[in-house]
Length: 262
Image (tube, rainbow, N blue to C red):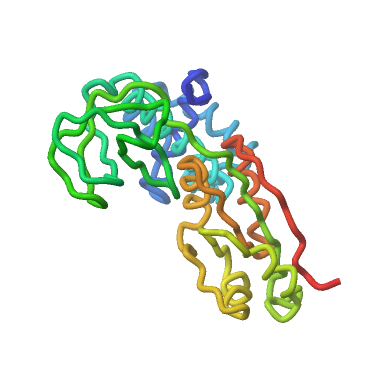
């Protein structure tokens, strides 16, 4: 269960932050109180707490804005809620859910199949034995998408290993200060390579590699990991703390490598 919904106080703080973020800078305590159905006094106390945590600040005219730290807290909790609702939809009501899989052989409607993950994608097969099973909804040739229903069991994911290489920001040398033999070795065998920051992107290009993901990179790393992939991330050093906090919040393990030349 998402931790935020286990605490009524945290839930209210989350709702207040969302209201401020949605309407800033022209949002007042009375408006928030009316929207959430609480008293203005309660909103005032919550705002003091949020300000002390560094999540909001006021311009002195009783108007509020969400800080970068506050946005990060909103994002982390929104993702946790998304995972929890995903669990409800995928596990609790899975018996009425149609899943989409890729046929790894020609399949006929009504066929019982095994379901397994490969490179972050769900596949259906009659020969690749797995702990999860389902039933094909339509005839389909090999390699095409197909609906699967009556899913049972647990889809097994391979062990995930997130590897992170840290490169210096431009004022500390940027891509010119990267240990390229070490970077090249770390990229070997990786199917998903992610760049966080321009310095990281150029460092990869300097060894002939185009990053698979750059925009929305942090979310992509987490999403890939939850689909059983082990991404290699090249991150500029000043973006690293935020990335590591996100991975820690998700309970994902990672291995960090320094790529600046000594």
